[in-house]
Length: 183
Picture (cartoon, helix red, strand yellow):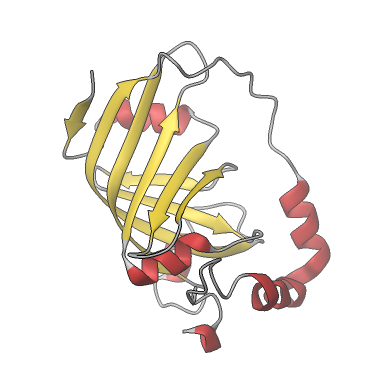
């Protein structure tokens, strides 16, 4: 049976920090809903109602575009090991970029920011836990190095060129704000 909380409790935090994968969901008022899997060492629980997520350069940039239209976000974790559990955090978020004043302080919470595109700063309004009885068992084999390899090969200028070509608009044509001239 699902239970709701108005904050991230310590056992929630421990569960979140033990997971290798999380999912993010966002939607603008119109257009497609986006759900994306995320991994790597890219998420920090900063307090009972605050989560930071370092977003790496990738093929799309839906979350950024959606948050410019409607700042609601849902994050979800599920256990693929012994504990059958699903946890969702509902709230609002804002996207921060390297050009923003808050960037330096927030990016310092992470160790690998070479391919960083945005930081999402989420205010958690509700946490919901539910059973994960139908979630299959899966074995974690490790992180992929593909993202770091590709972005390392491109270099900073190449990554920005990639943003210009692939990340300035959502699939529905909404601006993402990834570049200054894309505000």
